[in-house]
Image (cartoon, rainbow over all chains, first blue to last red; front, side, top):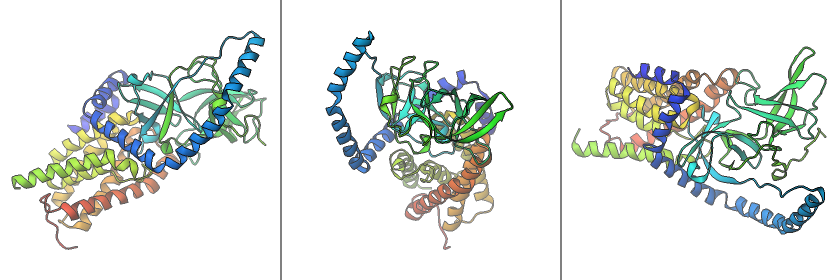
Length: 267
Length: 165
């Protein structure tokens, strides 16, 4: 009976499955997830204290020059006749990892509707894009990472010379846990090492979030298009804290938030 | 089983559930950290009948599926099978021996990961190989160590009599 119910659970459509899973997370599992969140916070506060202090000092140093840069930016935008720069809000939160093999495909994070998270919000770490929010509960959310077979992101080379779609490379063969840049016109070559970032097209992710760097050509359709393999910027299994973008806007840019050693072609 | 033993049994299982959500996130890589929830399930199956063990496995699996929607249903199936097989094999083959129970924890964790990875349909080829040949054995080993430690410390409170190895 239980085996039959399990097969039935595997076959239920998402519109039935998601509310059911949400109800379990918000009732039976809610106190346990709160416990895990507190444990993650405690762990971070103890083990990452030095790193957090160093990051705070760096941020404080960078912030010293911020008012001047803002003034300069405002003056330049005024000269060009542009309006005020739009801001991108975010919610910093802990990742509540689970000890099952499929954990890196979807993650549960400790921020939900109460913190302003909405479905399709981009999820990033200091290294780059982690994924996108797929379901939002009151205090938790489910994130589909780039490793999920259904993940897609509109992408471009760091210098904007090449556009394509980034997706997981699949789980078969030795190149699993890699990304691929699809739909690159056959005439455009992308050198190894080229940084690939989100393009901002489609309005889901802001422009400029690092996705990975090109490590080689995957396959090519004769005379039509090429697919390139990317080394991901972020390993979902190793991420403990993420930021959820809560006010992404189409055509916006998040490029300045990341330190990309080479935003253009390979050295 | 005496009433006091039954009470301690429930407390120990509840403590393992709490450890799963409090201690395990602080034990490093999630692919290697011991699975306290599975230890609790397997300890339950050591004493329970196969049918009840399968039902307990189904409930545990369903709860986990709510946290990993990428494999919804696969966790329920994996834990149901592991619960049933553990209780059945324990009743038919295994002696009350600490080492044998350690092997049961190891095999239970590995089989759970195997069924879950295959049934989810999201892992194939190299990714599945890495999972089953590298990460799962490590997690099975750490889970088995925790299970043996729990039985060694609290075996008499769980009404599980251990013979010498």
